[in-house]
Image 1 (spheres, rainbow, N blue to C red):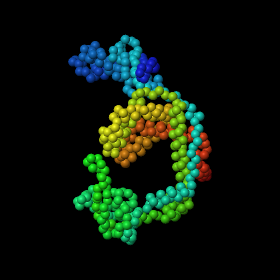
Image 2 (cartoon, helix red, strand yellow):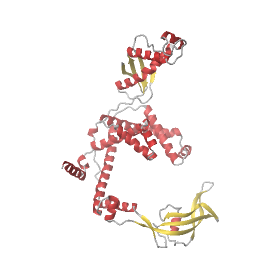
Image 3 (spheres, rainbow, N blue to C red):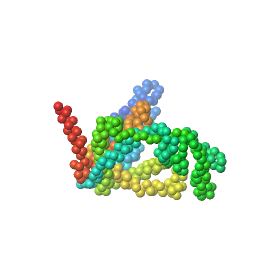
Image 4 (spheres, helix red, strand yellow):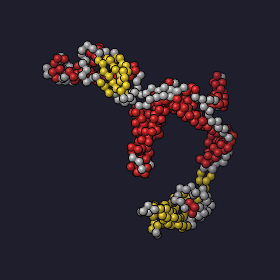
Length: 456
């Protein structure tokens, strides 16, 4: 019914020639006549019942042909992409349809121009063998992890101590005066302050440490400010501070109770063993991630691909959008950024244009690898990835979650992320010079024991 072939390339645009066999053309015209007739009111005839000769007095033959072509072209285009294996990067441009004669007993032949996704000639990734970092996890690493756990469960409890020390959590009233005038911007009441954390104006921490509870203190701090002529000068601010209460940090003991609370195990030694196992896996994951990035760099170097200008410009536009988005999040205006950098937007684009080919080539190589090794994510994997992305943004709003999970744009983004992830994971394993050392004996032993229990 449809035939297609690649017949040339014009300025990076691939030209496809598509042939629609005459029976399909005849069928499309007949359907177009019935469809148009059903929409047109013709005196003396019920809708859809007027002969074609009469219909053409009210509707031009060109309009009938346009209706038929609109039915033929989408099907023919999809069939052509399947037959040729061409993956379009932009919308097609059609040639040969404007004056097409559909009732001459001949097939309909027309051409399409599209920018096609380039073919990637992958390097021999099976020959890439890289050494993975072999990091030894020590008892000191476990000790440090335990301290982090204790700190995470620390509580601040009331203290009878009247003198403030660094590390205390205090409630304070602070008033700031400039030239004898109270400044709200330098003042706060019932302020919770972690002394020594640096969360206050420089100079305040040092003065609050050593104060007595309910004994006000007055002190002067020199704060830098920019004058009208652009020079930095010091401004004296007089602070009056009073500490109302003191709380001290209390961390849980390093004992079996901590192990039960944070690790779900009965003893501190069991928690240490669990942490040792977890830290080894984390170090292994980091080492594999590093190896996979080096493997990608090597594979990109040895792979060949001609990158269309369209992809370069899309990457530049994406980089520019990302930069502008980050600036907005920081409360900065685009024009202010350009002024501070002393550059124009065109110069920023040119900088991105220099790095874009490397980024695009890496993405194309990873896509080609994923396709060759069958690493394409399943529909369920894509749905789960989109769901997670949406949940992070919208929480458990079911209506929004269900809508986003079905959104084609979000699914395309998630698919791209998953493809890259799977390709990196594949290279992390395939390019490891010593894959045996990446196996966890403890996990293998536990799996073996589980199989034995299941068989029993």
